[in-house]
Length: 276
Image 1 (tube, helix red, strand yellow):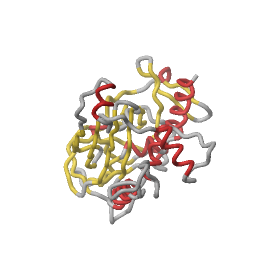
Image 2 (cartoon, one colour):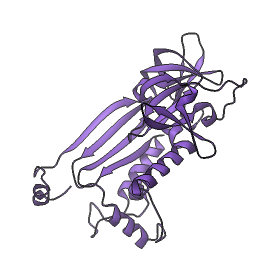
Image 3 (tube, rainbow, N blue to C red):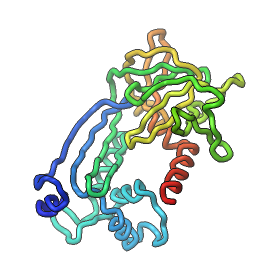
């Protein structure tokens, strides 16, 4: 947070604002701490990381990777050590505590506008609205809060990206396609390809089309955490028991997209295009 005079010079109110909010998202509790300060000083963060030997001097990092350096053990941007800062244990301890609870923490920052710290924690038992879908003959649930819209794709909407990636054209915009079956290591018994897409949006605003086999209906489901039972399963947030007694996995769109090579390739290509 800037000093009052600096905030006024930047056209802001002298009094800074920090907002704490909590919501239910993708089968988890989402806690956001948002401020309207100066944001993360990325050049300074990167320089300190180089000086401390955390990264090589010629490292090329994305904004997100630089922000995550704040969680590195021993990292601190404070110039002097005090009772409150400078020892490099604050953010590291926070991340370890959140991870120990089976959660994760993300940073989103805009220079001059502020930062948002998002903490995602699993729920032991709760009720959520979900879209029931089929993926490789398995019934699964996608949290409604993650879905922007659903659609049935056609061949003229599909475009290639590199050797194996595909993009979906939606009203003149392209979004990467993430095949849910492939991301979860499932295989379809038939040659039928996924033709139904769920357009989802992540916490950082990234959009992606999740490819599934079919959509059944929308319903409320009771969430059951898998922590302590199966451990962490990439792409899966929790489980539920449907009305017919079947057990269905509740998907975590955020982690499915994060692990998708197509989404990563699309993001890299878009950054290179913006840079040029």
